[in-house]
Length: 196
Image (cartoon, rainbow, N blue to C red; front, side, top):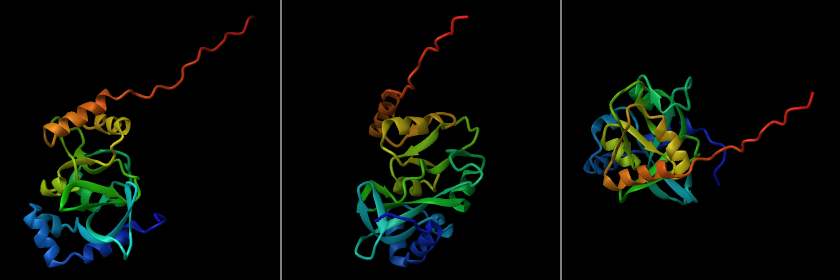
């Protein structure tokens, strides 16, 4: 069952469990060595519960990356120093992925809107990746939206500076569909004026 956990300690254990064979597998999949130098990936046994995962000894092996944020701006998707936010920020979630299914991932807590960060004030489009493996292959540049809900996805993508670059044509269609999703509107009432 998913419950209270020390995400920092859980990730350190996963990072420390990464063997030379795991690194070889990741490198063969196109993950650059700098990802290992910064300690941005680990490996753990996970069990899936709906769209989330938890660590469990009876689970299957998966790679794990931390979702880190700046403690002073935890909900921002853009940051003045994205590389620092990704490597030094406080972990608020863990994301599991599998090399055999590169577009699949699961989150541990569901607390984070994105993996990664966009450059604050950038006028260039932000690269939006479909899944963590592609993000790692790109040296952790850009973001991975961690929701498939079109309304949530739209809210995240609207906050990216400079526009969006999708991973491929199919991904671009998925992103465009999020912008076509109906927006939630609050109920609007008219105040009755009191007679004088």
